[in-house]
Length: 247
Length: 373
Ligand code: HEM
Ligand code: SF4
Image (cartoon, rainbow over all chains, first blue to last red; front, side, top):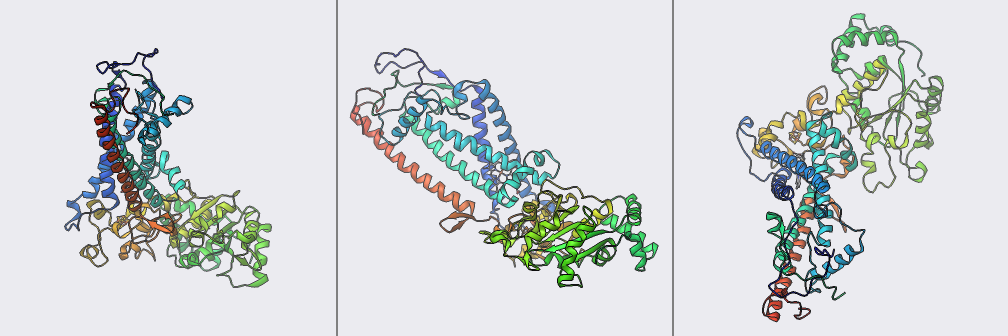
């Protein structure tokens, strides 16, 4: 997306001139981001422990121990936090700015979006000298956010609550809302476990690339990235407009 | 032989059951179904007034383990069910008659009692090659099944075969063995899965149907809630060890001797709906977990494709004939992604440093520097 903050094309800049920063991420979005980071990290660690408890044989009376129980309840609480935070975030996608909507619906119906996408792909293949001026995410990030993050997290939440409903039992809300249709969809609970587990790896791969890209763009793109998710402000390193070169 | 219209009570008295034993039987049945004591009288009344329900028990692709289980029922005794409660008019493994005489019953009962008999199916029909993989009495089983089902009051799908397909439908399912509810779609179907189902669950379901004249409450997948409403794991006596995190690690370790949880040995209790951990088997003597072996999930759909049973994580067909667990697949993908990140980072550093050198200041600061690194 060739995002312009000014309607007119500003003149070529000297190094000293930078465009004014833009306030892109409101406080709820930033809080949501870090809450989600924390809960996904917790869910992944506890998820690994649940899937394959690594500790050596514990001897002694079970009445004195509740290790697996504690790990599971931590997983469930983090899962609830993740889900509630996502609901808040979805609400914010409706009332927030267009940049806060991108991870739910990239503007694939716009020609400029596709041009931006190819430009970004060239940039990542080292074929483009510089990034476009992005206020929100670049089109490739939008697609990755949507397909890997949003869908991935939704998948984990739906499968997670379906597994949870197996434990809370027939007639409980988790069972009625999720287990009743998700388990038949996957065949049985064991297969559902496997998919829930694979979903974790999907999010891990996303997180790896996400963190790398964030650091890289912070250094190499024409705008701030990491500090933006803390302060909410997008800073620019110049005030030039996009040039459609190398097309 | 076709059912005559006698009530249950008449039949029982004719066979020498005293009124006292009859009432005892009714209370026991009420207890077995988990009903209030008040229901014993209701059951007695029903049995005194209602005619015995004709049952036709057909066998498709199966191993007869359901029948083997059924005849071992202790509460109520299978003989009481067969001789007193229902009128088992056709069951090719149990009946005395054979050949044309036997097969004729399958035509006769639906005509004589339309909409009043129960069809119990053990096994399932293979659909490939027009059903030629399962021939009973000279005709494809699937055709006979559809005919007999067309007039039935309800259909009972015995076992994992009739409910889900079971081992004969394991990937790639060459005969297209198909569960009953995919073949018969216009009748109420009650699924009693398990390989085999617990005897008392089978007789319990029959008792319920004959007593109340309707199917018990079913879950969304057609299983009676009173027996399949909870997982093995929910009522397992080893559950405290699970919550504690005490697991058997090898079949002969200290944990195994202490009776620890079998989760890490592949127990499927956490995902299996069945009554084994409460009802147990052989009159309540034991059940697999009590014998030290994990649950294999035999009452769940696709359990046959989720092996090996002694492994916590089921493998997935990863492609190219490779089977791997979620961790192996995920780990491999993450490693590739990690290598990609490292390679890309190296390229980026080169570009960044090279760009800096070229412009003398910063790769992205000047508009008129060299075009590409
Ligand atoms: C980023 C999100 C999540 C990740 C990475 C994650 C990861 C995992 C993993 C790896 C497992 C073990 C699966 C296996 O058996 O192989 C698991 C189990 C489970 N998860 Fe999650 N999970 C996530 C979200 C959720 C959510 C939102 C819930 C809902 C409360 C949830 C509920 C469960 C339950 C109930 C189990 C089964 C626990 C048991 O069987 O004892 N998960 N999770
Ligand atoms: S033995 Fe199986 S069913 Fe019992 S607590 Fe352990 S995992 Fe659950």
